[in-house]
Picture (cartoon, helix red, strand yellow):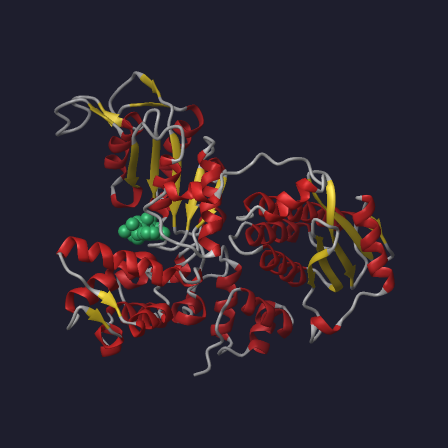
Length: 519
Ligand SMILES: Nc1ncnc2c1ncn2[C@@H]1O[C@H](COP(=O)(O)OP(=O)(O)OP(=O)(O)O)[C@@H](O)[C@H]1O
């Protein structure tokens, strides 16, 4: 029986996995891993069928040594088939099979064999998870870039006709966005879909991943495109200046307010307002923002007249807002208001093939601006493609500009790069951030503060300071790193600290892509 307080955590962990921009089978694997981490399962899995009814994705709970060697028992296979055929759930003695539905038709099943007796509440929780999985499958179909599965199913008359989504060539309209990787194509497809609505969008991703670029794209593809796109970086301003910038002020509202001035909400009327670094606004200001987002109404600073505007608000952050909400630093009502459609921008290191495309574009821009004719030798592309670029697209741009500026000839080769001469300041910066030895600005770049929470295998993981962080209000990833640091990176010891089995810790480390330090 799952503890009541744990249920919300399970739902939260699983929905967090399911909203990522990864291929469907990866999302389902991550969801299954999260279930294994929280529930005592004997076995379990998710089966999703393709358009012709053939098994398409088959994810098995990572219990035991080799998942691949385990086959379903006849009873399990039978129950799953019946649930998919009938769309009705099935309960066994200590097992449950729930339909996964898209447009009310069962296209798969979530099946669980409990290690101990389960209760009604557990089954309700699993039914909610099956619904979330169904919504994820539906989104995957709708976003499917070649439309293949959707088209096939429509031909076969198996699902109701889905409103046609913009053809990928329409994405060319966003000509300032470069990228052909599946990860970025998925984000582009979502961008096209949300651009057609007025929903509040929360752009999330590490610094330099292109949040502002995509906010501009949403605006440019929307019916608001002929009106203003206005941007404000909320982190850069004190509270009073922020208030005056956003809401404007009346003449004499404060010392130096010599004239009446319209704020950004007014300037963006009919258009789009990007509130960048929304995770950094104070609780007092959050309350003011909530009102304008809810009512579309506000008063200028020092004014009494209530102004009404029609603005589409897009917010962006690289902060872990969920942790901020749990810690009471960010209002939950504002969080829900701005997070209607989250779009997660993948870090550059997860965009296969995009580094060389972007590098070529940045080099062309450099050539144009400096009347030069530089190009890359294959060895240069090789160096670039292997770099983790923790500062993402912005860092790649800087790297190309700097290397082209200092290159010894028009053909840039591997030896022209700063990293090949131990001169790459970015590598030093991120090494310090990882080791917890840097100060000031380096700490502000600490990947633990970012929503995606880490730099993955290529760059390493934060350590040092992690051990000193209070356990309360941390993400699961933070708790894991904290425990690993305390345990000297011995998984069995960390498992004891966390009250988990070493195997569960092993799965969690892999799931969060935490490299185990061996020094
Ligand atoms: N897909 C892309 N194609 C071309 N240029 C890009 C792309 N993504 C980002 N850039 C460029 O990289 C730089 C950083 O992008 P942007 O400012 O949008 O990132 P960000 O995520 O908003 O960063 P921050 O969180 O630091 O504000 C900009 O110069 C932008 O034009």
